[in-house]
Image (cartoon, rainbow, N blue to C red; front, side):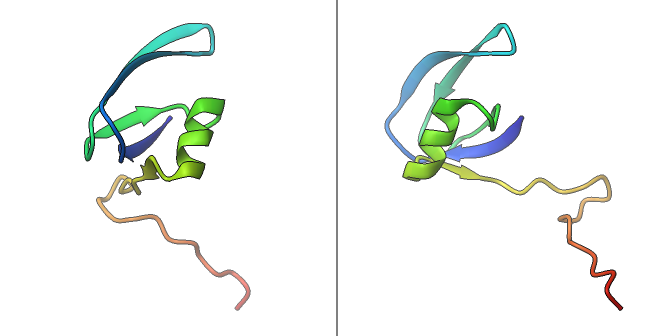
Length: 70
């Protein structure tokens, strides 16, 4: 599951993920957790209706890649 911000019209729907139903209320500007591999979620990301929100790691900082080539 990833955290996204919804940019679009208000919607209420049910997604099926891993054999269970997830009821979702999408309101412009609000955050929602959704399964990133769901085809509908992927379509909304591609069209710009969902924007991924970076979540901080355990220490409250954003994750960074570490360059180990040195």
